Image 1 (cartoon, rainbow, N blue to C red):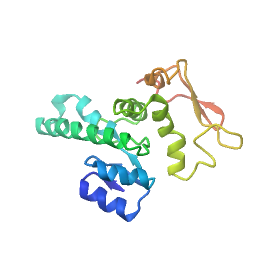
Image 2 (image 1 turned 60 degrees about the vertical axis):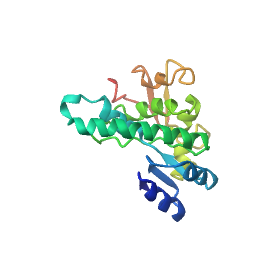
Image 3 (image 1 turned 60 degrees about the horizontal axis):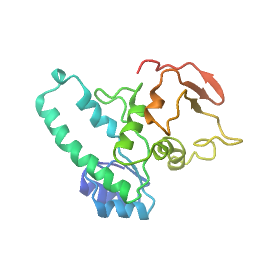
Length: 186
């Protein structure tokens, strides 16, 4: 459910959705309910972060001010959700203003660690947990026999530094075959 406001989140989780996308005004009680009922959270922190990282001359000041005000609330609420053991899933809203497809996933991983997820948890949110939510985990999400081998090879360890995923020297594999890295410039 695409839900940002508290009432929309409440209605969605009581209706039994599988996930909440955004969840900006999620409260502690809702986070606890989500944890208890295995409802995932796809915060898309990068969408808001991209606006604040944009060239400020291209945006009206009131948009920047409103985004800054909401960002503090958003990050606080996402930290509470993490503390309540809500399942986080990587989503990006790539294609929204200043939120580029080339960098959105990598940025989202980094931002998830800023709200408390470990590097390992952030990586799992982009792989295994995403596949489970989408109900494609029989074929994707982990490297196992009889699954499609979609993965990246990095020159550095992302468990030590999550920003290792942005290294342009990474190699990308789809179904076990190396593909051209279309997004070399980050």
